[in-house]
Length: 65
Image 1 (cartoon, rainbow, N blue to C red):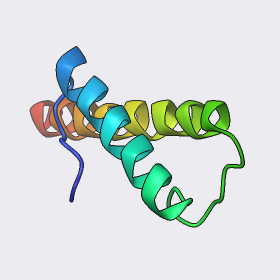
Image 2: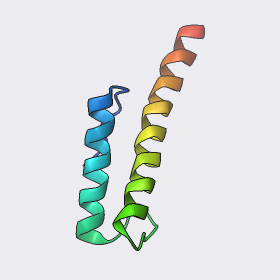
Image 3: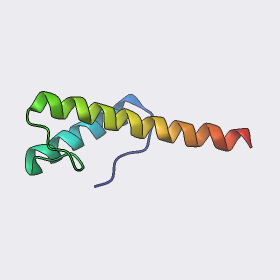
Image 4: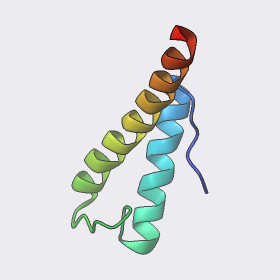
C-alpha cells in the first residue's frame, strides 16, 4: 500500500505505523532488514519524514515558477 504524501502529523504517524506493520510481516523495510523493532522504527521515521519532506519540496518548487 502506498504511503500517504501529506505533511500532517497524523499522516506521518500513519505512515510510520504502516511501515512498521509491514516490517513485522516481512522482516524488511524496502531492501534493508532491520534486526530489532527499534531499528525498524527509526528507519520508518526516516522514511516517513522523507516522504513528507519530498511532498513539501514539490509543493514549494511549483509555487516558485
